[in-house]
Image 1 (cartoon, rainbow, N blue to C red):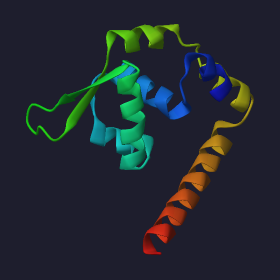
Image 2: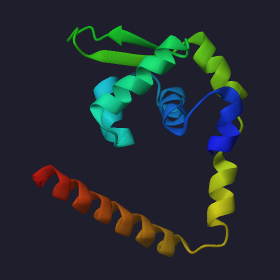
Image 3: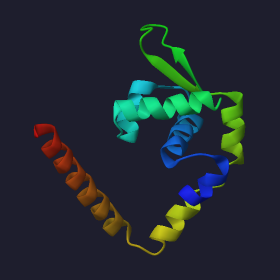
Length: 123
């Protein structure tokens, strides 16, 4: 994925932000923290880069000015349309694998990650 995005000067998390905004539409920044499962500070840094690149804009929420609504700019939409289809990565990685086995692997990894995060929070 990184190799496919490198020519576009995008990282994977930047791509996920663009993907979310392109497919879901304008999104509150706080909601992306949950969806992407990243730290608030990490996402803030990523959003700052996307804003500097002119791909995303932050608009103060009409109800709570402290909250930011994110949306693609015209340049962000144009870049999104120019990006390669990354679904091929999924198809290559998971071709001919049983859906149940994939779901089990995802659940095991999610549980392990949650346990490690919980452990780190207690430390």
